[in-house]
Length: 214
Image (tube, rainbow, N blue to C red):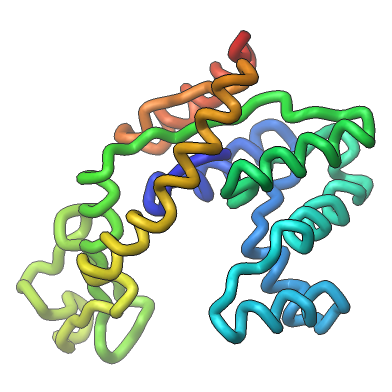
């Protein structure tokens, strides 16, 4: 699964995994699990994460390789959040080739940057309960700036502020486009319009899987 932050690829990966009976392998979840369980790999990863550094590609590939070696992934898996860069894509191909496998398809959930900004920068949260979540356009409160449930003021997390979202996209989109080109050059990329209702995007992805790019 390939897509920008806010494109909905994580949601779609979960839906596809359920529909196809394949494991949903999310690199972020795997890292968090390893760190929580204090495994050797988790300790190595946390040493980078704690100081704000990128986890080296070799460590990330090892994480994915270990997960794909588990029995439930014998028939395949849906990768979410990996590969993020061309070197990671190349390493994934090499790892799979050694096992007699390959990337059968790269599914790109395509959403325009302006829509990504709208989705990512529109979230507001209740001061008294983080379970009370609103969105400026998709789920606005009845009274601007106030929680519908308890009337408490709403606030925006730093990560959701437009300037932060813009910087995040500036950092993550260029390498994502390189990964898209990488898989397009290999004839396995299928792009679907992600600016549609969730069920329509899922149907389009399932059709792309049934009729893979040639």
